[in-house]
Image (cartoon, rainbow, N blue to C red; front, side, top):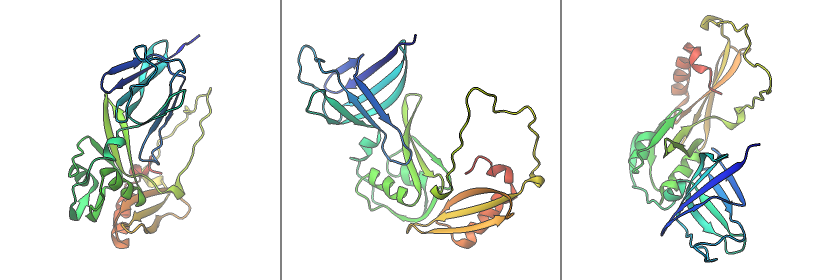
Length: 262
């Protein structure tokens, strides 16, 4: 039988390593800016023999979970709130916690892409996906997190993921929620058929929908290709209808690039 094990490391005025927690609830959602973690401490826990909890807002937290002490990092971030009732609950946020207190560098651009925008805000460990050019843009937000929230209103996503022990910020346009799809895979059987056939680009029939998300929140939409073809969707930002059509046609001319885009 496997034994569920955990390790919680808290770095503040000093280092604390906890091997037992009553409950660890972790919420990771790319629809939200911030990943959350709620840690419920054991009722009888003491801190060097004292009952008063020494953890403070802003202390760094790493949660490792696994079986039989084979642990992997499940959450890394900072304490946002320390509960005052017993059992004590620590509410934590990922690296977005720091960006909520990080002042922006106010700038105006005639034509900027997401990567340049974020690097001008002092963010270097960034991965950009999707159509990244914003066009004319003005940074007026007070914090970097507020800036990312404004990008989210225009269809962008921003979230942190841990890679090789470092927090990496992913940012960009992902998909139009109207066209989001869900695929259910059945366990216990081979889902890769032995009779797969290579499909030539000339044989593909595609109905391509292109969506341009504008700075004012409006959307420009066009459709190209075969009306009865397989429906695919691509996204851009701040492209006029003419620009969107030309860009979408390039995508349609190389249909192999469309697979994997929903």
